[in-house]
Length: 174
Image (tube, rainbow, N blue to C red; front, top):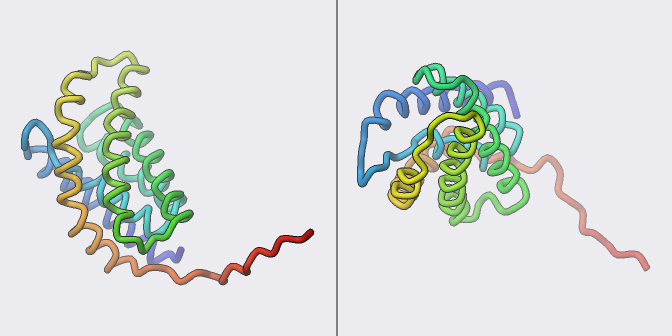
């Protein structure tokens, strides 16, 4: 990954985090709001891998935690894990598959919500589990609606990388 890619990723995630905190958190559709930051992080992680996903998740989570004056590091921890694992999924499977962003968003939205719930529980803070269960399906649907345009924009800004070297065919000896 080049320095220019790192700058583009940082700007993308910063803008998405600020938009999430200031605009998208005010939207309420059936008790849920689209998570632009999570969708952007998934797109970056799929296109640039686990290291970029983890670093981007930590950076974006820190921006959200400072912007909302929440528990510092809580969102960073969950977004770092989400960025890393979606990046690993992107590295180990075909990144150009049409279903990869949508499948990733559906899975990571559920895991992200439960991850936040678990971290709140571990820290001894109150976390409304009933509200999480009630808003989970609308959150997944809203994130899936936002996925197409966000992934297209991120893909245009971060051109897919060419493989550094073609892998040789594995030959079995014996």
